[in-house]
Amino acid sequence: MKILILIFSICFSTCFSINSHAIDVGDQAPDFELKTLKGDTFKLASYRGRKPVYLVFWATWCPICRREIPNLKTIYQELGQDIEMLAINVAMDEALSDVMTYRESHQIPYPLAFDEGSVISRMYGVIGTPWQVMIDINGVVRFRSNKTPENLSQHIQRLSTLNRKN
Image (tube, rainbow, N blue to C red; front, side, top):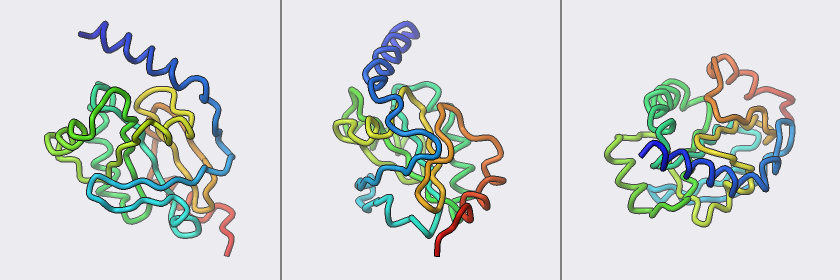
């Protein structure tokens, strides 16, 4: 089973590597709109000037993503008022029903979305899961990595005021 997951991860990375530099730190984050699993509309541009955004790209078959859930729950619980968070399922060989079942079985409180056709994942140059992107209040990408940013709470204030335009 571990070999199968490794092979799938390599294939997944290869599929997305074409756009691995679609965006980089310092670039303006591409706008997008997605429905969350609860039916709410998430539009990135609506947070510009209001709140930083934390995007987490993930998959149900990703063991690292599963291990990150407690950390993401804590981030959402402690920092949810200061930063908008959206976990985007990359929709790679997954059905929406599987994602909904996963959300329930892991009691995920933070907003989830399903990236039908992996459009947003490609746009953001996702090269594996988990993949995380931090966007400041001006819509500029300030972090992109496969690891959760350390000391996120210390960076919230900076992300909220960095070059703020009134």
